[in-house]
Length: 258
Image 1 (cartoon, rainbow, N blue to C red):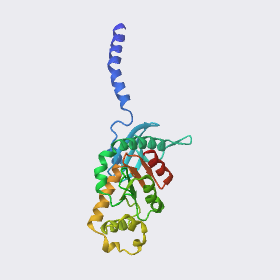
Image 2: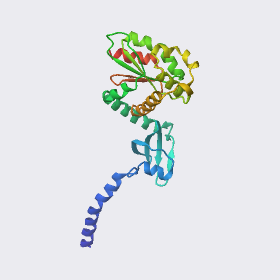
Image 3: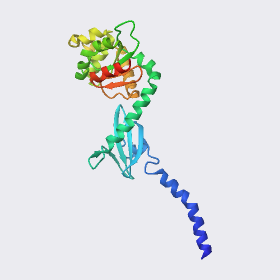
């Protein structure tokens, strides 16, 4: 009896690390995009930017083609959508936590990306020789919120003495893309672009060019790196940003950065 007890204790001691290792792995162990594709063969190539256990499932936050997907993976299935519990959107909470962390990292590392951003600037406005701070604006020719922001942006740049640099990120396609391409090909200055009367006069099918297309394609890649999902988006040279046509928030950001 004593020998059997000792043998049991030895086996238990040897087996405990195995149990601990298995428990440590959890439901997300080994989960990759290949796991998702096993269930959804046509799922696009994606980047996992968050993976954790939620309610017994493996929650994946992934980015694919500039879009973000919340996935919940069980033993033999994949769910796409939001997970709610007692009135709380657990998916949104997870997304916001990861999003804020990523934006903080992007702000910290923004200076390393400035050379790439500068190559894709299509228009500039420098209110004075003393303007040292740089404000990057990502816009779309047919975005109504961008149009609202564009009516004020020169004055705001002037009041805060910041060097405004504009990039195109057309989210309204194909019209926005075509007009942005033409604006690049024609080399419009900011005043000409903001006048907007040119939009009805151009013929995109004849006036687009390889330079415009190349810049827009490169900017498409850039905005994914910068985690920009909509327009207008404003990024200051220190990495601070404002998303949307929230001009009061923009003024506050520029004022506090002086």
